[in-house]
Image (cartoon, rainbow, N blue to C red):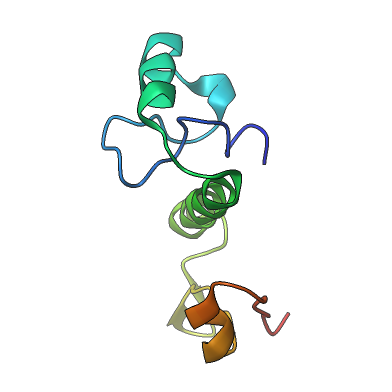
Length: 93
């Protein structure tokens, strides 16, 4: 996650935050975003994962449909884990 979860990158709460890889970010915009970024490493990792999944699902690289249904990411997680912001989720494949 070093290039997607770097400070200032992929911050959904900052509309000026660069998105994607830190290697592709404008250095001046990134520096300004880093100054505004108060997220923990865990939150940056989460936001990076969300950005990567969004890119994968919207890029068309996974195909337009699977057996006639739109491509979706489905993750099963325990409600208690979600409430406590702990645990893990699983997928079917």
